[in-house]
Image 1: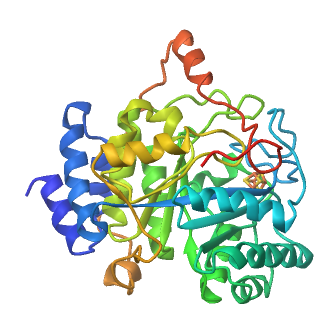
Image 2 (image 1 turned 135 degrees about the horizontal axis):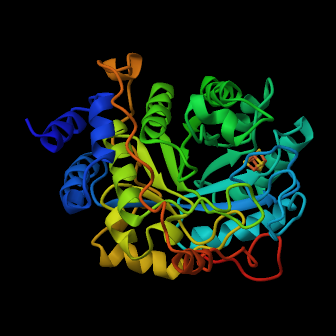
Amino acid sequence: MDLLETLVAKGLRRELPTREEALAVLATPDEDLLDVVAAAGRVRRQWFGRRVKLNYLVNLKSGLCPEDCGYCSQRLGSKAEILKYTWLKPDQAAAAARAGLAGGAKRVCLVASGRGPTDRDVERVADTVSAIKAENEDVEICACLGLLSDGQAERLRDAGVHAYNHNLNTSEDTYTDICSTHTFADRVDTVQQAQAAGLSACSGLIAGMGESDADLVDVVFALRELSPDSVPVNFLIPFEGTPLAKEWNLTPQRCLRILAMVRFVCPDIEVRLAGGREVHLRSLQPLALHLVNSIFLGDYLTSEGQAGQTDLDMIADAGFVVEGSDEKTLLRDREPTAADADPVADGDLVPAHGPAADADLPEQLADRRRDLVSVRRRGAGTDLPPNA
Ligand code: SF4
């Protein structure tokens, strides 16, 4: 059976592809791209119909992080000219969340820079959750506060937090290339702590950091092994002033192949198109809606996205609908499958696909892409209204 037919059949059965099949998706030629999108789109429609879930980021604390994640504009030693501020007050965070909810967001993601929260920080977040829920009782709140210590996940759950985000970001083998201050295992441990407390786990990746296809497949299989409810897929925003500022190596076609691969490996998991979509997918963003069932509305933590209304227009124009707050994201409660228990597929890894497709990007084009990165100057932490 042809690769795509096999992957569709497996996706419709919630069956894990082999690593070879996942790698083969990443190796498909550009002329087959629409076939790949159509195939992964069938799996997406099976589990999520035409619904797109909107999520809204509120950066509670920006910059000034003691950790050294190389991709992050908030890292130790970052020269990126981002907004820097300490904890927003609950009413300030609630005002930002209100704008996102008014724009159609179903989930509010409360994010703070740092290695992990103190117990006092967790109480601040609990107060913020109360302030948001006082206006919108049913809002789904996700917290993203870094590495958790004992008891913190339970306290967040009791405060009304629904989900906890902590991304694995890249493969275990390459984790030390992007960060020296904490480990891949630390990250896995926090995701598992959140799950053990009954929080919905959200954990994803960043593509475009110079990794191989095998690394991408490794991190997606590692995520699948953790069985999160949602998987955000970020495309590196190479901020000037960070170690990865020169990593302009994604094309829109490669981004779509990565999203298709994630969909085949995570057929019924919420796959979210996250940071970097405007910068790397550019005019092909609407095609990605056939692969993912979730996006962020408006701006990101430290960079600006396209206007919230443009997101809504794009969804409508592409024939999708915004998921309502009364609709379930996952069509049925996900139960562990045989694949969840034994995600390591047969066979050895095929060699990594060649270098990322944009390796020879002319300097002039690279300059135009750098111009697409705009540091966030509105919304949380400023006097300007948020983009939603
Ligand atoms: S990703 Fe998080 S922990 Fe790492 S530098 Fe950025 S804010 Fe700090």
